[in-house]
Length: 99
Image (cartoon, rainbow, N blue to C red; front, side, top):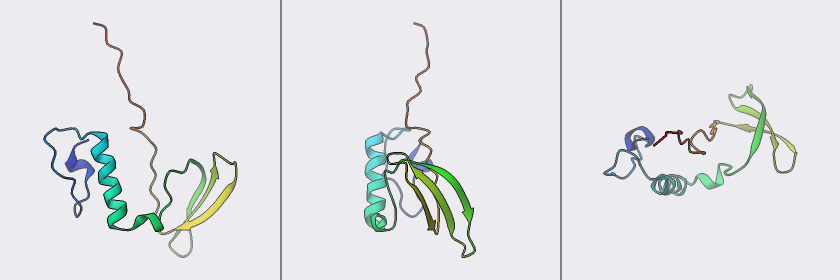
C-alpha cells in the first residue's frame, strides 16, 4: 500500500520514493505510533486469539470473548474500541506465471 493510504492524517509516514513502502519502514512507523501515544500500556499486542463473540455493551464499550489459541483459555474483556487485524497481508501471494 502507498504511504498515503497507510498513514494517519495527524501522524504521516515519512516520505518514501517508491509507491510501495518496505515492510521494515511500516513496522518502524507502527512502533513510533505505539511509542508516541504510549499505546503499550493500553493495548494488547501479538496475541493469537479466536474471537467467539463481539457485542456492544451497555456502557458503549465492546465486550469481546475470545479463546487464546496458545492455552485454550477463554477470556471476556471490555474495550473502548476494537481493531480487527486479519493478517490479510501476512502471507505473500505469488501468482504462478510460466516463463
